Image: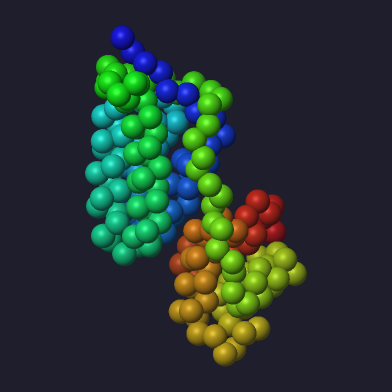
Length: 184
């Protein structure tokens, strides 16, 4: 007998999107960046239990690489574990693990992207983005000369993880803009 687990489609899309956001911070040519996205896409499309096991292993590797916060990876890992456990158990019994069909719309609360209050400097960065549209780190450094480029990059990384901004381009052509804003 195959049991089906139901959850809200938008929530699983948001969870998949969070994997995409976090893996943006992985090195560009790092295979794990693309493997995690691929498995998350498969889970979104309807997955087998083995895909959850693979994704869990990828999370374990990623937690120790210092590309992103250990705790951000752990949070994603725990949310996927809840999804896996929810359809593996029905009345205390493990159901057949041959396939998973994600139906909609029962909900598992995944929570907002971030509930942290932003400090004054990050609020100032968001104000600059609202005014200028998109910026590079050196432009913000000119406006906030007392803050190092390294600190500004960390601030942008945190804003990225919180889902407030997005990064466009790479290396010397990296720009930041407010999430969902059309490109300038």
